[in-house]
Length: 553
Image (cartoon, rainbow, N blue to C red):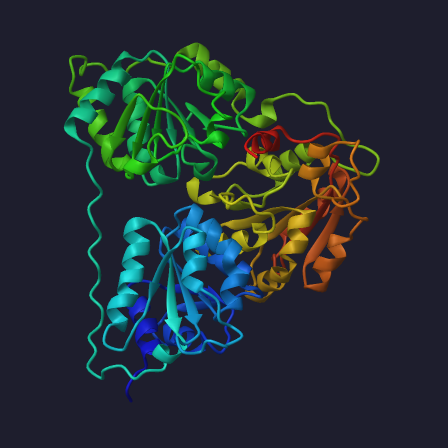
């Protein structure tokens, strides 16, 4: 039987390594989704297209593979647009299979300018245009997503999908991944010289360096540098005693001090944006700044740099390490740099947020979010994958929950949208099935994405959902202050535990540490149902990390 274009597209994507697709199926994307399944891909049905797009984004980030989401024409794409925007801003390799009304269907209810929507949010728009070119065009979408780390919206017009394809259509050739550019030799020499001269160097790794942990640790060892990451790369140096953890709003006071005192900051695959540098205040006025990136256009976007190095983070770090160790001092084991015994002692005593003293806000039926999160960090197994929603609460799980490595933390915050956390946790959980998934969400974010509570149960995921419930949109409550009318951003008490039980969860309401005992019971048990922790948190003041966000408004 002659295959249709929809079937060729589905088979091509599966042949090229797209092994999992998320979506909500309607009439427009039914055939292409079934073709993917017939070719061996797994399908995950979400309850809302926005959740599907975010799940696919998180799965791609956490698995390191190209993700896919399948959408109905028109409203399917618009429903998914926030998740697609987050993926596009994050340079997630994702293929969005977007059914599209036929070119002649001018009056169709579903008709919108889908390529314009894709372009507006920073995604690449491609289209399957005919039977003879369908396999090639589908392959181009996968190649663009994979090689350029882009989110690609592949438009699939309904009339083209239904066309019969040539019976002898050849499988699409696997596109050859381009070799990442090597840094120019003179740039390697210049960076090696600056590192050799620096007394207090710090290497900061971002999303573009998550594949280069070993090479960056070797370079830091050779040059006496401390290590840090942007928030999206948290965990990359988790086991390294010279790690400062996250640079930016989530930095401990000690990490912030050491970052400000650095005389050389080298950013690998990191944009050094306002979040990572606290709008520049984490970089000392006399510090030399070097930025290493594959994309020349990304260098200097957020602040001036003294040296630009165009190249892949892994190959650049390896080349610079070789240049340093082959230099005049190649006989020594490593440079001292920032790695003094005094700094080591301070890091041992105060590297983690839980080592920082605080006044407990708990009482009156509400638990301090720091006390809550430290207790959960002690209870939950170390092999975990943590997903964090956006909101006033988000620093507590980001700062107080340890993760084993960079695959243990999924942070969909490029668009700073509330409501993505639960779907993020689902995608990350499916990419790391051997780890306990932990979703950290606010009360507003949970209710925005509550339809995906069903998806967690239906998939049988042993997930822990922690709701930091302060009874409102905390960022706005604290930003606008007590003098404003806050009725628009505060809400009556909500029994989130009861809502979760309706979806088949085990659930517990937490107002103090003693209320966490059922969490231990659940962890010790068969974990046959997901668990929701409805934590009623104290929030007498706003968070400093969102003060940083409002500086950028």
